[in-house]
Length: 120
Image (cartoon, rainbow, N blue to C red; front, side):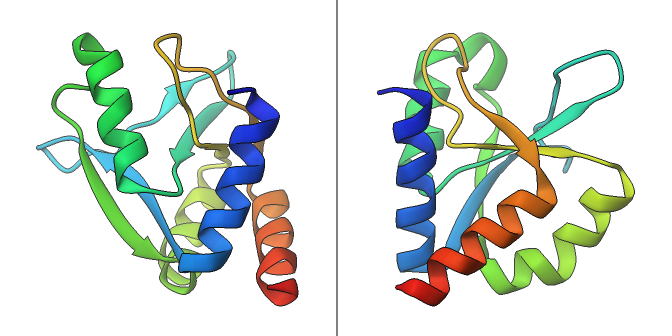
């Protein structure tokens, strides 16, 4: 599935369920990836099964992470301020053995998903 398809699926599924997912290590740290010298990306998924599938594809890196569910409204209220303060990018439906995804600004995620939800 292409990156564009993953993004479309993310917006469609989260707008329907109003739930998104991220991954956490047993010590409570959140899964994030350095994507450049000064940028860090926070991956989010539209379903628990997507994280579980990715764990199987990349066990050396992701075997210990656990899926964490959060409502879209709770995410905006509690996670967005933290991610904004840390100047994080977000990655939608990171997938595949090569951990393929598309990083975007947090503000783009919020405006795009809110627009999709208002249309649904």
